[in-house]
Length: 488
Image (cartoon, rainbow, N blue to C red):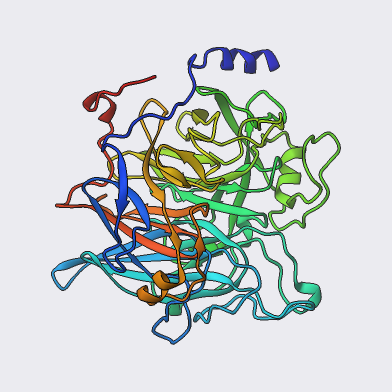
């Protein structure tokens, strides 16, 4: 079995992922059409408008929550002669001022805390080239990191935690919640059968309604799928429950995928998780490099020979395939396995294979990639959540594109460094500081691919980016052929 795995690696392409020039030329400071501030760097020919900064007053009089994270466009409709879009945005918060949403899961203030769980979601509307409003839609959750859009027009918000507050008057956390377009119809009911774990993101096959999930728990993360009892694909259908399974490499027990090479290819099988709501426990004997707190689903998966990733992050569905991120795949500079700069895997459910299509072997190529999306035109975009990378544009985190050959290129760069006078002039309620090292999150598109939406988590800013004069934000899939590159 090990020999077979080695043979698969030997067939991998004899090259590594690189950082290459992008199709749109160099970046330059671009001024926000709303505040006039040069918050990000973009290629010539693109512009953007920000909205719903942390602290901005919402229509209910409450301040916009901070820690903007995963986000998706859940609905598009014609309104006033233009397309109106509805987005749902996560807030990765622990105990904080509650999000006063119509639906709240846990409102108890546990002992030792000043606040109840402060995570949740807000729902935003955008029309034409302008933002309309942002309203609370889910509250009482913890560390809502990423999630995923459903084919039936709602949002799945994922808790990245194993916290249990039941002993102090609260509830258990670590679940997935569905947020409906009409927030008043959101149940705040956890989808228990999707597992209790440090959830990251969800991707759904629009035909079968099967969901794939990632887990973000260092060196003890698995790749899961959820088979719903009700495959009808309607709001609330996942709340009816289903079967949770974990991926394993066929013919290889407990495969270690912490340090992939570009082109690695594995056949995949699935094992059942008998109790998706099992409590966490200590890492089992024989599981190297893993701290003690391990999710109940992973413990069951590991006992049945499932594979392990380092830290599963973003995941998305496009054109019959699932693309998932391991943010810490690889080896660190000091030799720690599963503490590298990240990789992207392509899972093919028809062939039941998992292939490494991008592996960053230095921060310049990518630094702890996180959320992922594929534009309607087929280009993969990745959000960085690492240290501020210093390249030809100075220090800052980046929003990266992937080429068809598995190389990265820079589409945008974080340039948020604000003084108190600048903040006051913009009418914002954030603290002054250099935020260029803060993560990008929640990248997503409108159905036509002409509007990109993305967050910078702190201080908490949401962006809409488009090409002047219209047209797709992302290049065509064949852009490496159309834009010859000088490779070093």
